[in-house]
Image (tube, rainbow, N blue to C red; front, top):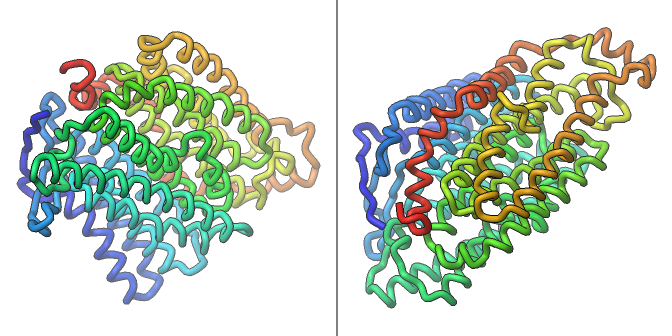
Length: 502
């Protein structure tokens, strides 16, 4: 594959990575009262930069844009190399949005305020770095760097079983990262012995022609690392525990950003690096994707804890991303990427809703809730739109991505597409059950609970400001998906060029 680059006139990407890190360092020496405003301002600047790049991006071009490269350790072929195509850019933009809204939502945090915002700022820089790095050493540094702040966010600001959940999250993702590292080192060494070149650049490694047996080995090593991060069935068990114990903003970042790193890895690395192995494993990946969709949807249907329901639904939705990715056609790839964006919006909104409910009721259990809709109409409306977007109602973002993913799967294998389509009904079932149980059924709820709802207040300004952009974007993608499809289409063709000859 031949790549072209468009150098950045202003190093916007590097600035976006450095600003949160510098802010975290400065906050360390300041009083805690500066933590909230500085974090919100910094995340707003990063979001403005990402939005500017989104509109300035030339989506008709195959070039890697806003590209920066600086030699770091030339003896080993290691450089600081960042840039974006449409896939990287949309994930960067989604990350910036999720962190900005999470900071706004967190204005009422009271426990170890300064440390809380420092952890999130470091996490934001690491997450952005993962999506924009084209040198594998820097990619791996950013990939690993996000583990510690996320471990602390769950372990320090989480709920009763936070240490268990944080430890489980760390162990799973750390071992997944080791498999990823072994695979990348293997590619690096193979390239040196067969081409005499030392380089950790993605653009050099992607042109390494591996024998089929080695493709299979390296594909499996990287796939293990990515599958745990997605998480795919059966590697998903760390996710419900992490979501249940994490604070609201932590759950939002987990669902909206961290899960996307796994699916991003499959799209960015597994397909272009190992095309023959990717084709060989289509039945396996389809099977795992469909099991994830059906099994975790059924698990969500059986849960009583709100966050567990949303966590299992996340695994189910990621199954559609897996199907779209390994359909190995443009429709499926576009569907996978749009589902990643849409799930980032809807899961963030649903976890905000869960946090809002807990703030008022001090419970995440369905049995303690019900009948609040008519007392908090603004929240009930935004929650309903988010739930409908999550189940794929036409006109909202979830429909576009899952429809395209299913269409792509249908072109590759009718039976897997049919099974996944049937599972959509289960998805609608657990989401409607969640909404019905929490918002309606007033006649079945204790009078003391209803009295509590009568005296509760609707959304605060910060809660509304964090929630409403997500809902607006669900409509924007759902009503006018053409702009988003045009944005990512060229990149999808480029990623699939080894399969479709584009």
